[in-house]
Picture 1 (tube, rainbow, N blue to C red):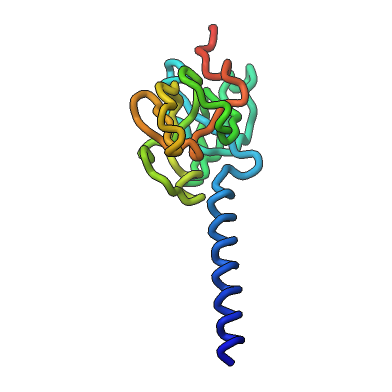
Picture 2: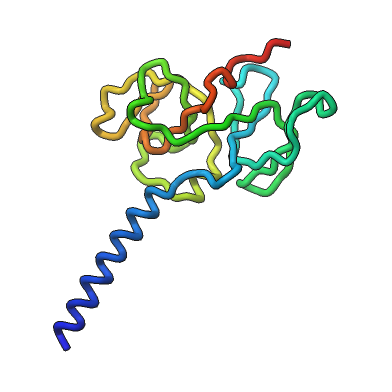
Length: 162
């Protein structure tokens, strides 16, 4: 009986470890989710939220996209849509443009809901000397590199020419 109980505990512990590892690696956006934001200025100054695009920009919509925000289910017209992906260590270098979740400086753990419902901003990497600690400095604040996103097209964060 003790042997069966011990075997059950070992299996439960192994499953818990695998589940925890899978949960941490699964912190990402879902399919078709993008960072969407609006503002009169530069896309580098906009506040972004995770959203799904409902209507693409066109002359008819005055070059705005209609977005459905994940955080609260609201719909809004936005100026900027930034396709991005989770950063890879080799992409992290000083002066690289990245996207980071506001309020999560120096956190080592972040749940999927927090990741998808955070406010996001664009910034420049200012230091990578603590990358061995999983930290990268963005505009003077340290963030866990595993929560950083890289724009698929960095030019999408450049101001629009009117």
